[in-house]
Length: 538
Image (cartoon, rainbow, N blue to C red; front, side, top):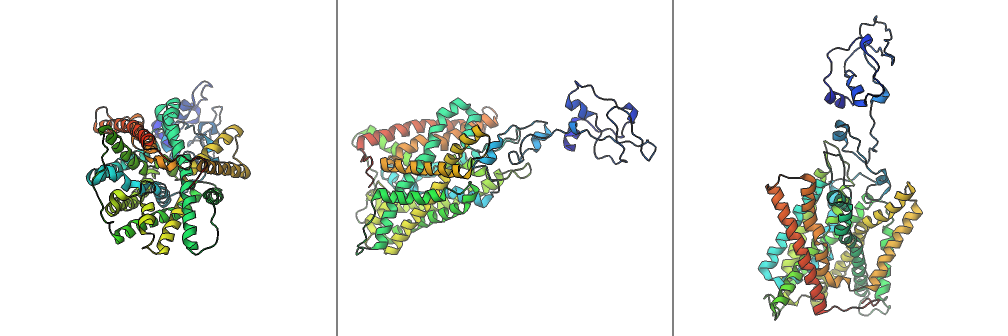
């Protein structure tokens, strides 16, 4: 509190006599009352001045007097400590930060004991996945040169917008922390516009990814069983829907971990498994060499406009591979933060570690995959399907089984981190109404409902992964466009300056790309067709 007093008024050199001190009028503001209080650090005997203006006699004859600060003159922040660890600038400005205390009851912000390593685990687990294995498919249309250029530019672009989000997480001017992507959107664009622009892509990136992970994990579990059982095995395998259910049961058990910090170990296992199967697949492909009669000529359609849509669809696949920005603010929210030690420092350190490893996985996957298979790479499944299609006979069953196991483990781990924002949103509906944390049994029911709801969608729409280009276009603004606009709105860079111009250009180009990629993905789906099989998982 001494900092506030020193900033409000210069401290008098010596305390005034007790007789000169008068009670402030009742209408006088708190700030004016504080201005009358001498600095707290002046050494003097402990003789207090009474509220009626009279001085109490002390052992020293009353010639040295100090003022005891009334309790009413010490403003106390109404914000819980766990909500505003960067509250010093707010207290210095005599502002009371108004934040929702219900955050202490929700799974994303329930624990703030994270660090740079936890951030690296979460970011790596969410930033690399099975979608990276389809990157060589985009090279079929783009070719070597444009494929590498587009992929490099997309990587740099999304890393830049990731940096913007990390910086925007907390504001030193207001003391606020935006712990969820949708909260930052609300603060930047307004609640109505944010709901229209960002809600569906964010819900898809969370719920839709969980559905795709059940499809991937269940089908890979079936393959893993067949590899372990062998060709001479007489045990009857489960149906695809039953394998989906096995995966869902394990995912629902893991989903009972209480908060985002508590799944740091799960994310670590998922990150290791992601690096494992990515490295294993491209190393095996490199070791086996390229297939005979491999062609690297970009595939061109007969009609020019069809080729244009194919190119845009390929760009959508690249955009879909670089998703995960909707989780960055949530991951950073698990860290403590103070004025001297803001959370953006360890968060950015963790991002640098994780994205260095991500680059070491996805670039070899794309380059080696296209070199080894060229135009023959399967459009469905990408590198993972190519491993079993072309090397099932000349590769040891141990390698194939290990790659499959890594994929299953990574899918289970990714399910937890992508499902956490959905758990958080559902529990917030309860806490907002009841003004108390959700009991353990309700939390368990809510999470099981979401998990088995995703299972129903996976069985009903098993072809969801076939529209990666379309979905990449829909979710692209969350990754490449919105952070640029939010930076302009929140930081207010100098108009026509470098930061202002760069973010405007990237934001507008990102929105245009999103519209074009969505249209192109929709056209490709309609033109080429996808095998629609409702309630018929393969």
